[in-house]
Length: 305
Image (tube, rainbow, N blue to C red; front, side, top):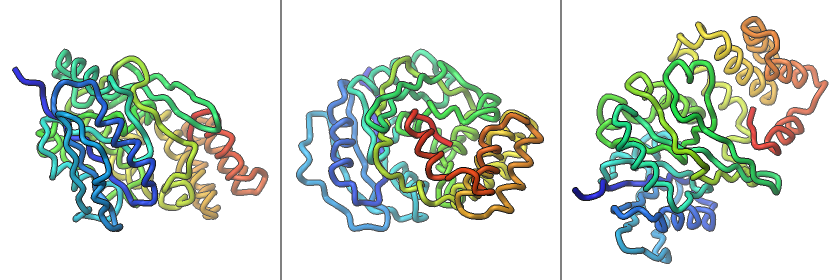
């Protein structure tokens, strides 16, 4: 039996030419024996043909434009619909894969056909240091209600294309600004099966550069609020509600929407009095602490707010 084919979808807004090529090289140099195609989707920018990228045996590269909703969700869906592989993987344009990633993930998925998505642990590069964040070997829908489990990073996602075109569905393009679209996909996918992860960091996530979402705090808050509305069962999990309400509160505080920040902070603290995000949001909204400083401090330890 021939090895399954894989499509890697990389959505980009341009401006990261060197980083994009690094990401593509990491896909091209996988030690997987099967075919891997890379589909780079350019969102609201001119398409770079990437004709300087060296193609290796068993590897192909296509560049296309996002013809759906502007943003990350539309870009990923454009790539999924253009994919020819049996499986679809994502890689952010500023991240990179370790050479054994696809081989090890597909071996694990073959051993666990009940799984709907396979990921891996990650290595976060930030503030001149590397932090390994170990993903749980397995997670169910209830686990994601309680926690985003950020060790399951979208640059590590691999799903069956037939699931994305069928029962799981495409990435939700209604998520405001596409913020949290990966979390929404995990919540939806795990209603059909568990998520599993390969042991060891097979994805390098680079936080030592500005994110497209860094300064769009109101968009972040709106995206998370949308998810709470779409999945009301989150409100039934006190830990999960405290977490996501605290995140919305903190993002709202950084956006200067102090009234909304305090309302969501109250929701978070009623669910869990020790919610650090909620207390952080209150401190920022009352100008006791600088929001950007707090974000930088947490990110320097390989974590996010």
